[in-house]
Length: 383
Image: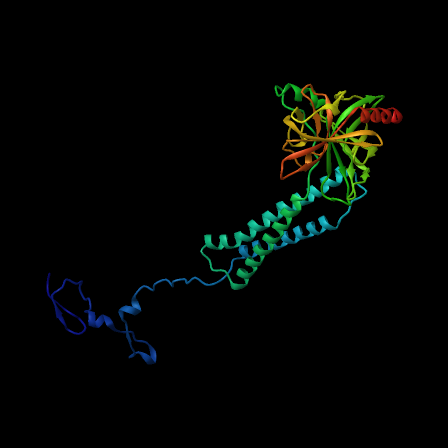
């Protein structure tokens, strides 16, 4: 530490400085000379020589191009779904076979459902992306994003509605090995008959269960409950196919149908080999309430053998002879119409024709000896 004297103003101090160094007052009033303004004094302050601080960037309300693009993509996908839905309700591909027609409707509805789901996700990602990037969207993009979500959600709900109205044609599979022994014997003769009736339902098939009663010369005859109109009059749809228990699906046609009280029909199928057949019970009309019976519900939902008990019976005389109707306590439903009724030995007793959802009772028409004779006469005539 040593004293010093400012070479400019003569100020004395006691701090250690380099030789000829100016004091702080002289440093703040430094003069540069030059030209006409040689005597101009420039004052240098701490603020003027300080290092400038970087400007703080403020977050502005703006939408990114990605958010805008996502909203546009969602709206475009929703427009595609709307086009598919319009095509779904307006098209009537009557030139196609029933199976192809149902599959086409199912494909359209499924495609619309998937695209609509993607549109909902993309619409919601407009705000998700902005939140992840910590950006404020412009008001116009916010509105566009909300609109895209609303439209996408609406078309998604409509696509779900369309999809639930359709069905995809599937083949009938065999029951699992090692199951009920009686079911294993009966499944070969059990079939599911499907018919496409556009006037009744354009998007789904009408189903009936049936059993193979005879096979000869490359033909099979299947006994079932016929389709009927609102007046109970049997109809014979042109688009009919039969699902066999061996996995085959073959075209069929109704060759005979009778209304109530007989309420039976015969479907003819061209096939080189029959997977099985059933045996008629010789005295089916003799069954009385309290006796155990068995039924095979629609196997398209899975093979099962249901056991029940006859609750009541009623007989009436018809042009074909005596007709017997019984009710049993089977938990069946609308899709089980045509389910066969068997005794404990697997002999055919009758077919389900109606059901009561509230009471859980199912109604069956019995194949008595007179009806069996009629069926045999019809089979021989068709052969």
